[in-house]
Length: 166
Image 1 (cartoon, rainbow, N blue to C red):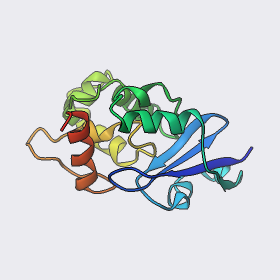
Image 2 (cartoon, helix red, strand yellow):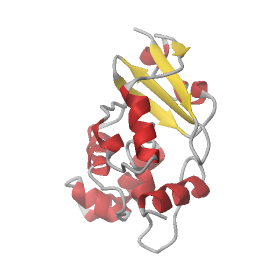
Image 3 (cartoon, one colour):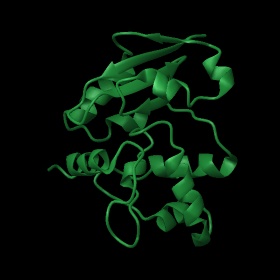
Image 4 (cartoon, helix red, strand yellow):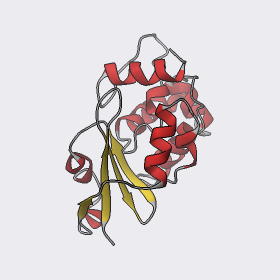
């Protein structure tokens, strides 16, 4: 099975999308899909990478999201590696609706973990391979500000403004 990739233009820059057997395995704001590919587990990398023009439903979902259907990314199946704790946090992230934000402690609580697990929530966001489908951009520090974002704070700010209708 080959991993197929597409580079979709967005107002904030190119979004690389990587799909394996109809499931999104990586996505990120980069013009180079190999930058995402090398972050995948070795067993997936052995399958190889092919860049295509259109990924069908995944592409349509991104375009719908950018056109204002803020729930369009929610139905795309995703899968990424991680510990059971990280997987629970990523699942909880997918339940944070567009136009809303949570703190790291709130994310940990939503995942059924004690509030002291905010550090684990931050780590899960930092290791997220499927932005913006697993919307770590919707997590803000309780102390204020935007915090960090793998693709730059300007991308996080743009995504939040888009989802707020600005």
